[in-house]
Image (cartoon, rainbow, N blue to C red; front, side):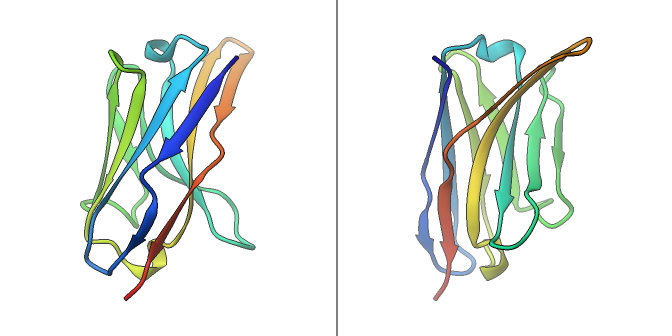
Length: 119
């Protein structure tokens, strides 16, 4: 059974830091690209950061220089280190695992973790 379990969310003051974790199980973690998305109420889900199987990373412009994604294949975990947090970073963050081979796509999601940036 595939599981992605996020943790590490919470309440933090503006300018603070949080590290989100996503523990994966039930699939071959090392051969999947991983990503973090976020979705505010009434808005579309936004790609925050991604990391490929070759460790290539991408970031949304809004988080470049503040967030860092990393992948630990030995422990089947992906992280999102968030620094210099702003109130506009407040929302639910979701972990995603993605693999495409030809027309076959495997796409898994976690349940989300709430991040609130407020004084």
